[in-house]
Length: 374
Length: 249
Image 1: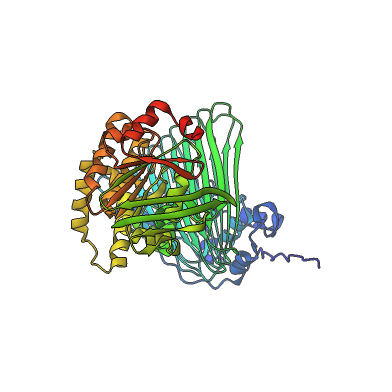
Image 2 (image 1 turned 135 degrees about the vertical axis):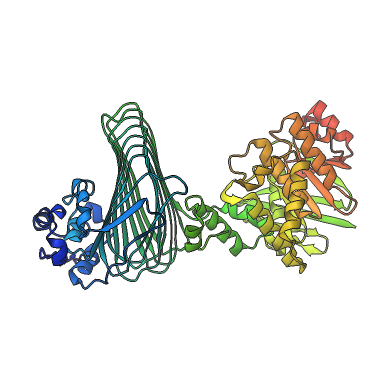
């Protein structure tokens, strides 16, 4: 039997509200062009080899999104404005230059169907690091532009359970962004695309905890455009039943003398499926780069599936890089060690899985979400 | 009374017979040392006693007090008072030593139907033990054996033994890879543990540990059998003469 995969059609018609569609800096024409030119992503094409994109497209086509839940900030040094706010025009300078409306048809399609959008900027302030909380409705199509101004610090806590989100972050010189993402179980298709650009001496710490969802895709892109940058990305997932998680992580080193470290661990059980594609790209000019990528998966059932692909693309000659991906079962030696200390087998397995996930999920709320809190 | 009774034990690994009839009786209050060249079956004996899956008991018996060890799962053997200090302690990243020891101790208490140790008493006990074994208290917050030096790993095995307080402790080459100072600390730990109510079985290649821990009996294993038993002086003989005279015998 020949199986064909029907491609969902992307309507180039805009569902974006009239209020937003009049903002020139959103550059909807360019997004529309992208959609018309490239159409919807194709299942089985290289970036969508193991994940069917149709439900994401269908989700946006269906429209009828919930009313927005604006993000909130813990400190006045963080300014949050809706796209439609006249004071948000400063965003014109940066918007779309990081994520790019042409980078993928899904991000362009996100813009054409936007239900809400916010620009955020964090200014330097003393005292505790301000927290920006993004808690999106499961049925929403959103876009964020977050700028951490030179020398400022910001922590984003992003809690999601479905929807379609594109987040652009710009971390200016010497600034720090801590991005904690908690992905709760979702029944609707959940798509997110995060692009972060770092300038000189900027720091980005990304940590993600993901539970199983019917269909979830996380695209994370880090663009290093400065010296002395430190990007640390960690993530853990625990999948059950028939859930599907696709993680596409890319780090582009465009400038010399920076560091990136990617560490993702997953526990994959039931009939679930985890896809991981990690890619470090080091441009010709990015001499002295230090970059490491590590993905480990533990399968806890015979029917679970893992598709992991680590990639290194190096054009500079003075770099320190490593990459690796593994998938397998729990280590029999570790289990035996715990058994010989009187720990019951089920408990031993849970202890090992907990430790494995806590290696990449250091914050308490992430550990709780994955059921591995101490 | 005998705490550990091994009779005519035959054990195979991957269909290859490694132990070919071991007889050994260990009574309360005794320290036994098992010596022998590489590949003679010493570690197979401790692994079979602890219940490693790949080690198949073909015949014979092994008893811990009244219990038939072969009929018990590895965790039940531990809960009934058998302890194995690993030759190569396993690293468990992400699980702290505290979490690991508390879980192990709680499992023992639950199995015996006694009350679990309070967190305060548990921490007090652990702090005493780390001091005794000259370990940095931060050691308890680190992942189990993760990035530990060889000496720290072996001292951690002794810490676990003291914490779980077994009836029979099997120490598989706990002295290997230790410098003189660490060796003395480990020996002090073994001596502190040893009482008239428990027993220690040391597997070792070297006489040097026995300078600090005096065995009541020394056994020599060759080719899956105990070929000679004697008192502590046998270890000195072996140090001087090697094993070849026994192979020829």
